Picture 1: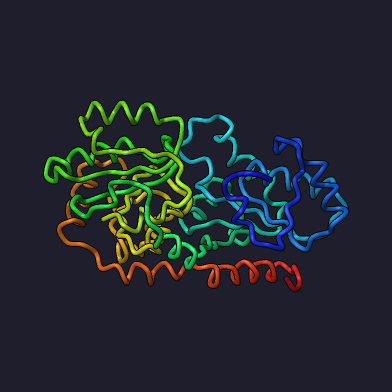
Picture 2: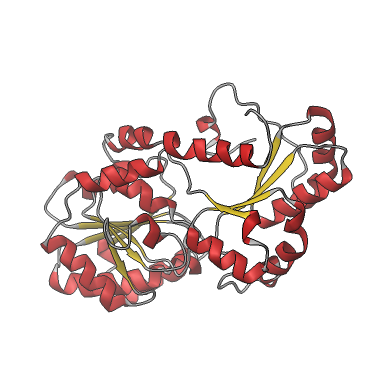
Length: 328
């Protein structure tokens, strides 16, 4: 019931804090909630919370509909032994749900392949975005000195500083770009455990004066909108929210063709550039090409509208109706 995004919860939405500190300790408090409040639908996200939701349904007298969702390619490319067990856990327990939602077709196909669950239990619904709010925030003046001048091409990226996002490949690509565009700048928004490693790599590549890692920024869209291109260098994704946010700002996107989501959002290069995962040379060439031949921005904004709240939320309601959840 706290955090930097709490103020974004719409007025009138009731927040119930189970006050347990851990998902595993929430089971019986969730059982009590289900028995007392009797919601029409329980929608859960992330594997460990999904398991809690399944157990709570089993231990309760609640007769509503249980919908689970996964927002990343389950068990993909992880070194965490617990996460490696997720496909097995899902295979054994998710059959007790009424519906399982995935956020991209690629993630859904991967999920079915890893869990062997029936395709009839799975549905894909893309993530929804408040496009108008993003565009309003994008009009604000960014609090960063590099964006006060149009003298230098600026590339921007955003995400947790972790192995998944593969920022080392982005730094190596940027070094290649700087050899041809000495004034170029790179901003990477976000925090994470790899910060020290990335800062050290930037120094080794001798690009530290042209790379900034400002951490968490409350309004990233003001900077994204003024960048020459947004870069997603991930090894894997479930969807790739930042791509839609960049498109909403009208900012050209260069992304790795990673599993899963970016290719679907970008319409297989109709709305952006795709490069191989981990290929610094290809990424650098795409960045240089974007500066030389900028992408028209209007069609990018139009594409973002396909992921608006107005379009996606009815898909959730239709999914609930399809499993007999009644009128939402």
